[in-house]
Image (cartoon, rainbow, N blue to C red; front, top):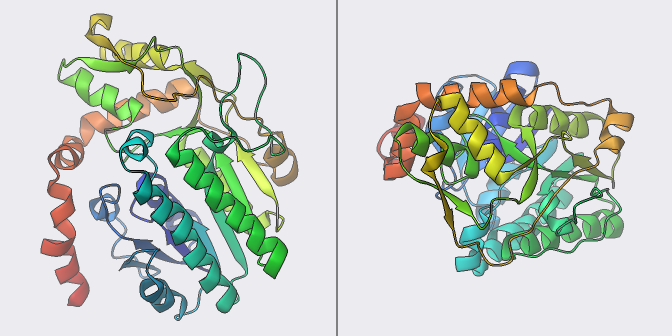
Length: 338
């Protein structure tokens, strides 16, 4: 297949590009990314010379950029491109509506026009809202988003479903729990905790830290998306989770323990507006129908993630300083033109 991966320089999208190139050598992969703050082309330097990989600098909200990519012939789309940081959505909801809703609509129109055989839309468990202390999100759980981010993702989910039912576009939607692993930007909980702990800096924890999330290693997530891409039934939704619930506070404490740092680095801060208390995924459907299951134990995955940030300080320091954002124009784009 020739697979278009939107958001292909982001955390999950970049890991998925790398996964496809390593596990499905007959596929051609095109990574499309606008390289906003969440896209980092430096994360893909190890695969840039592969003959079956092409990076395209473009915006999913631009009809011209999207048309140019689809015109070369695309068999399947895996759509990661999204504004995804909840705190940023509270400050600027409009950017999330533009990218997550309008961008999805632009891609869906192109997929219809060019007869794409599979459109996999990567969503989030946050579209379901919050759970109490018991119960799990299933694919039949009503959508009840509680932040501008999750509302924009719910809107894009509904567009994908509408294009399937109205136009017969072959789509699937995946909704995953919290991801962790290499190349995640250090504004997110796990990498933020790691880099601050290494520097012996205070680690902010919202509220009482008792918010519960189900944590999924990004490589297990990539495997699940690949299964949906190849075997998922058109029109279906697949929840992806690892039955691995932890409070935010306990996650921070575990990272401190791995690094041998004191717990008094924890600093409780005012909770963010509308902070959902608990998410938990029932992944029975994808396990039963597609034979997927997570393979990376959390202790192992967390330790390897800590080690990755210890060994890749240059990468995350360039993210923190903003230097990574100039890399494309000053170096990578020059190589592409040669």
